[in-house]
Length: 433
Image 1 (cartoon, rainbow, N blue to C red):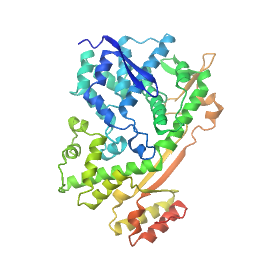
Image 2: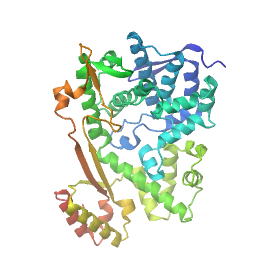
Image 3: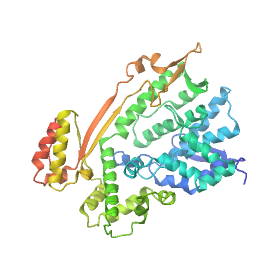
Image 4: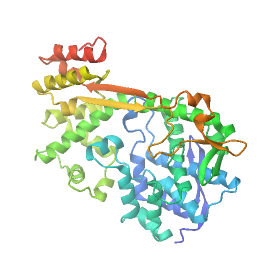
């Protein structure tokens, strides 16, 4: 088996990119592995389909899309005489294809409860005894580590890393376009063609021609709007909190030797002291959903209630609040009131604190985010040449939202007191009906 050979072109029909073409035997074999096929069973947007019913697309299709954009980036850079070796091209394409292979079901909720990072499991899938690992090592010794290093941004070739993971990379371009399409919203419709055509390489990093500046402005606003209109939609966040509460209750019951009505093989394995990779790979969205159907019949009232909420979209109510010294006191009082009537706040009271700017001048690692090359050859940061971006630099929007189920509070003796606290926190009239 010569993994470096080409094959007769294979294609995937994709609503975002048209035809996604595969001509490499290695890429074709990687797509066929058990670990990559598992991504078909994990939704790209977790619980967002609760709000946008057509957001059922998978991490499988997204990963193919990232591979496709990375392929196109390579081709566009070739036109600028930026040439990669055959092995460097394969490194870029494999990293693009496999960047999300370690995601779990309902990823961010799952990671929050297990206190894991999906990138750690991506590395394990790439470097431990898996079908993916065997293929990568057959292509080149230690190639699996190279691919993992690109995904983790530790590879010494920063140009290669930036194509897969940066402020404007193949990953972000695909998920904005794909998520916008499948949610039926226009916010993520970036000008991919213009962005690719104006890419340049200077000083071993990606910059953009000044003529592409408006496409970059549009990209930044698209990303901003998608976060606030889609990714941070209150109902989607509420659904994620329900999943977290459900998983948290399952873990608690397992650790206290509760007798479930069914075998808990999958959960016993992932809630062990050290998660086995084989057990992790057996977890997907369908496993969580199947168990939840049985959890509804459990005698533990909290588990049964949370499973019902998860399956039937009986979500927590949300209240936007202003955080200050008084709000902290009121939140503590609210928590005490719920506990006084046996409503366990760790499952039924959640607070989201989030802050995001349309564009920050510097990234988390201190590097300038987006740079423009002027006709003179001078390179400058985007906000110095864009009046639009200059006006929004470091102007964050915040979201402080409280989530709890009013239907449970409604019948309790503390209902009126809880109502009064919620009205003070949110500044609006709240009805328990």
